[in-house]
Amino acid sequence: MSIYVGNLSYQVTEEDLKRAFAEYGTVNRVQLPTDRETGRPRGFAFVEMETDAQETAAIEALDGAEWMGRDLKVNKAKPREERSSSPRGYWGGNNARRGGGNRY
Image: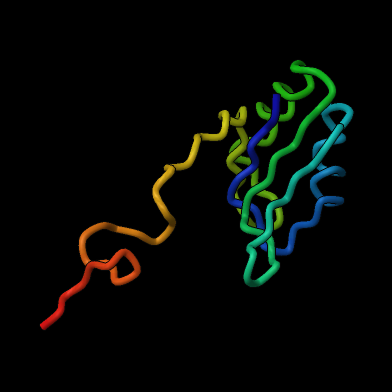
């Protein structure tokens, strides 16, 4: 299971997160997603710890805690939702790529 960590400072690093969560047990992995265009962190991360007990301790201690000037949101990560199979950027109706559009 993973821990979701939200409302992070954009200056946070994976090492910062490892140090903070190491106080509650062994950190197996940290994922810090970045924005594709800017390359900067997106303000959230996922942390995997060795045991459920360690994850629970970290969640209880850090949820709502102030860290790096932000109030953290820390909870069990939810499974990733599947994305829609519709083409990206298509809202229906008036789409020239699909042969639609106004021809006035």
